[in-house]
Length: 156
Image (cartoon, rainbow, N blue to C red; front, side, top):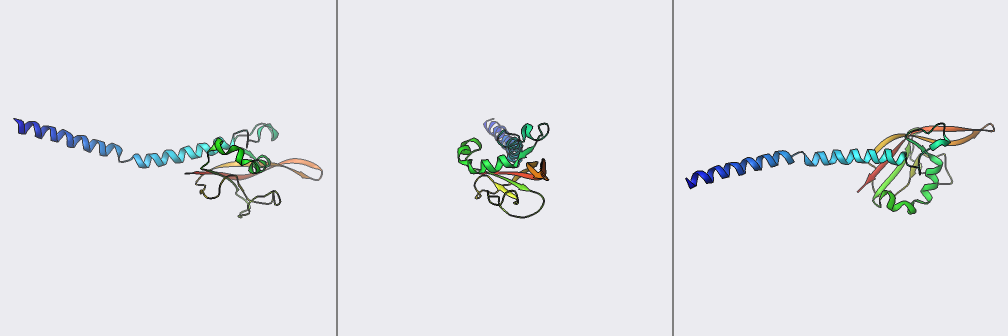
């Protein structure tokens, strides 16, 4: 009788261990999928935040629109926002066309491709497409120039 009770208990322990292993087998994969989804949502959230958003300056409040002039001004004052997005966050805005790896500074703006707002040590892994808009003058008239860009977010 004691042998039978031990055998039944051992059987249920083994079945329980099998169920636990089966349940947790996809945990690491689902965690990486969740991290990727959160990063893409963070990229969209950043693009629509008042610090980056085009707002009413470009037509009627575009969604996923980044004001390039605001981003350049924010680049110089990014230390004030270190706790806002986290110290371990990299935010990069990269124009799709024309291709190139010219980092933006005050001297070469707007003839550049990459606006890197945070540390360059962390790779920007997750991205979302945005409109990168700025005001430009041509023939005495000011117009909105919008280009396709990717806002890329990476964090540790």
